[in-house]
Length: 82
Image: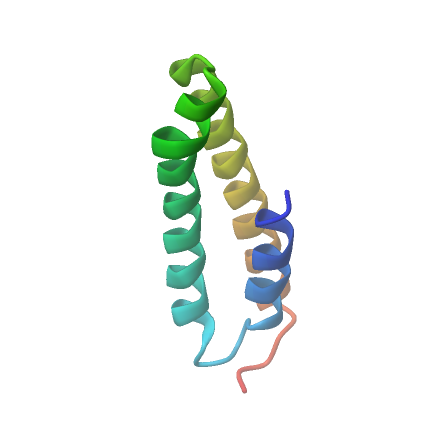
């Protein structure tokens, strides 16, 4: 949530600007980086089972990305191109 919330708001705030795709790509990169760090560093350090933790994390990120997409589509109908 600490990563997804600000990224989502930043993306929605950039709707209609030329920065939109750059911010979107940066957000995808950060999400993949988070999954990599969790899988390679945090999960082994804590001794947790990798599959359930990573599946839960990726599922949450995908659901949040879906919500972000819906909000972006709804907001884009209201935003004029800047």
